Length: 147
Image (cartoon, rainbow, N blue to C red; front, side):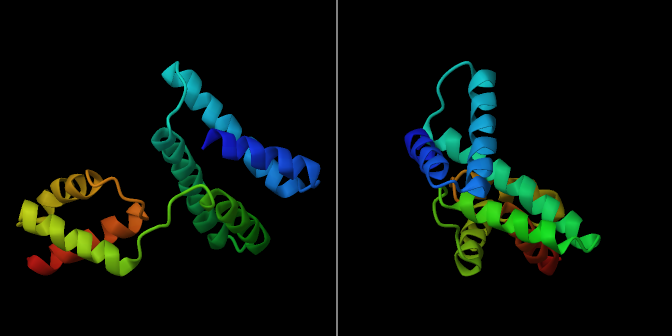
C-alpha cells in the first residue's frame, strides 16, 4: 500500500498534476505522523485506517463549507476524497449495511437506545469499510423503531 502511494506520488510529480500531488503529500504526511506515533512501520490495515480518517476529515469539512455556501471548496474536497478513495476497498452499499445491522441485531438483541454501543461494537468487529456515520444513523433509526 505504501509503495502504491509512493509510486502515485512520483507519477503526479512527473505529470505535473499539482492537485493530486498536494493530496498525496498530505496523505504521506499523515502516514508519517502515524508511523512516528506507533514507532514502527504501518501495516496495510493501519494505512487504510489513516486514509479513512483523512476522508472523514474532508467529509466533515464539506458539511461545514456547505453551510456557508463555499461550493468551490466543496468541489475541491470532493476531488480530494475521490483521490483518497482509490486506496480504500469499496465501501458497502446501504443495502449491505442494513444487512449487517440486521445480523448485529440478531446477535446483540438490543432493547433500547442504551444498547446502541453494543450494536455498533458488533458491527465494528466485522472490520467493514462503510460510512460509519450512516451506519450509526441507521442503527439509531432501527432501535428507535423497536421502542
